[in-house]
Length: 474
Image 1: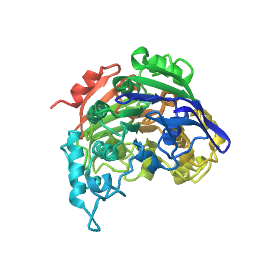
Image 2 (image 1 turned 180 degrees about the horizontal axis):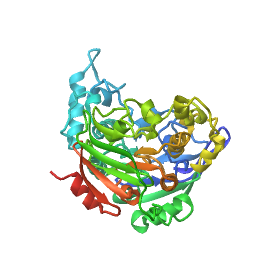
Image 3 (image 1 turned 90 degrees about the vertical axis):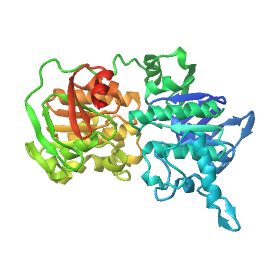
Image 4 (image 1 turned 135 degrees about the vertical axis):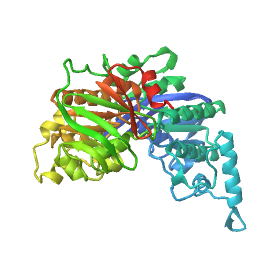
């Protein structure tokens, strides 16, 4: 891709961007939200037409007026939000719209046989072509997307935040698949905010900022600090702001022997001014704990003070807030304005409309966004909207489930600083994160869950190995 430029409604989002990827290469494209990564990839995939610049595949100029044309040229894109039909089988999803026909009827045998062959080529044995997609894990659904790309004879595969919704053990499986694709001579363009995986997988890294290419370098010639500086235009001396100097305040939320369908014997204290981290493997009960404390999936047994909420409204009234793991499905009304989203909690409980401009300034969200639909904001700004919502009701306890998932390093640093500020103001924070470095860097102590129980508690500064030893102990 040479000199790619693109504007929307007079706003220039890409300006003269060059990008080159070779057969068998994993090439990372990184940048803050709004840097132009997604627009550049959508131009390659035929979703948008460039205003200027050229695209060459195998030295030949190509012009895509539709995604189908890009697919026929060997380009496949796997989006962060998977595009599968849950009530169809794996084979039906792989060949959707391209079903083989025999004597005027869909040849299901040929379709399932071809899908099975592709699954075998990836070493996938945990599911088959006849399985319904809704019964698959997120990691398995990503395999289906990759199989669909292979069925199109893709030579260039774009992966947009492929690990955002994966557990740690599933991430390793995805790494193996990416390496297998590259080993088959397929060019992989890999977009991720997780710099650790970028350095594990990529041979080269292209950095975008404000719609322009900053540099393309071999990954071995860069380090994390340099990439962050190139992305945000400044040094981030530390990913994590310093912890509070003194001891935490009094206990503001306490659970004894809490239990429901997913949790058993939960004993937990949250203290004012403290960030309590929650670690655990997939299925350990991390999100279920947050939902139980918030009254969304309430405890059915045990004691909880100041109250054991039986509904979300009761929890909010008691001074408990929750930033959900999936902000798009559970945390936001995407077609409503920013202002309406920020005011959701306070309207539900108090029915009044506080001034929110000072809150937007505190979460570092541009007030000019107030009248925009939330779906038009970047992932980082969407998360800031959710955080601003809870600041309108000033909860005593704030539950954060994957608060920085899918946001760029600049927004992540701003969210980390805000969490520390809220703790310094006396709020009790419970923070769930599947990124162990983040959890260790932000937590004053770490509670580890295993099979719906509290398996142990570790002090601030514990190692990743120590956390995993408790989380995975038999």
